[in-house]
Amino acid sequence: QSALTQPPSASGSPGQSVTISCTGTSSDVGDYDYVSWYQQHPGKAPKLMIYEVSKRPSGVPDRFSGSKSGNTASLTVSGLQAEDEADYYCSSYAGSNNFVFGTGTKVTVL
Amino acid sequence: HLQLQESGPGLVKPSETLSLTCTVSGGSISSSNYYWGWIRQPPGKGLEWIGEIYYSGSTYYNPSLKSRVTISVDTSKNQFSLNLSSVTAADTAFYYCARVSGMLDIWGQGTLVTVSS
Image (spheres, rainbow over the protein chains, first blue to last red):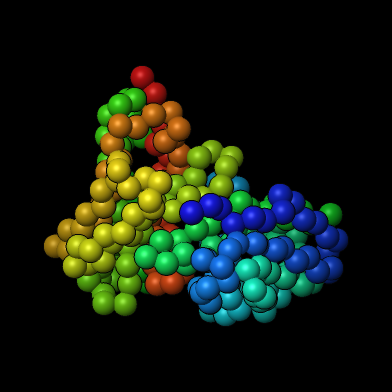
């Protein structure tokens, strides 16, 4: 299983929106609605931000939203805030109780 | 609330076996709704799925690591463990344990394991 493809970096000014793509195949992203997104600050463990494509865990701001079309999933962060600066990883179920992660995107708040 | 904590040696010699344990507190590892997984992240790089285990002992591994990985569970201690054999410098990474249910919703803080002589 190959890693899902994400852009290495994305940026936006405070208050703006940024969208991160996550491209897989018909064997992972395209075949299952178990796409999740994780935020990771330096030196910290990843934190679940979106699950099952577009659902938010309790406590995650509604500025974070997810979607999927075909083999590509997306995470949008609206109303960017300084604390949103972090690395973001997507993940998809890939069948046979296996998961695959994305390559990661560094989000910079300008 | 549920917490996970990794423990084990921070330094392992090449060709030896890396062994880590994840202790689950604030809840039971025997819950029928969840699997328990291991993920790793080389310093400065991305995340890699290692595998998962159900409380009954059923295991599932990343095909790329399958020949070297063993995950086990001890329900009496509310722990699950990772063994990775024949390690090389490429296995140097932060190792995380997590609760799995179609997503990884609770993570341990992670532990750095360095492979070096």
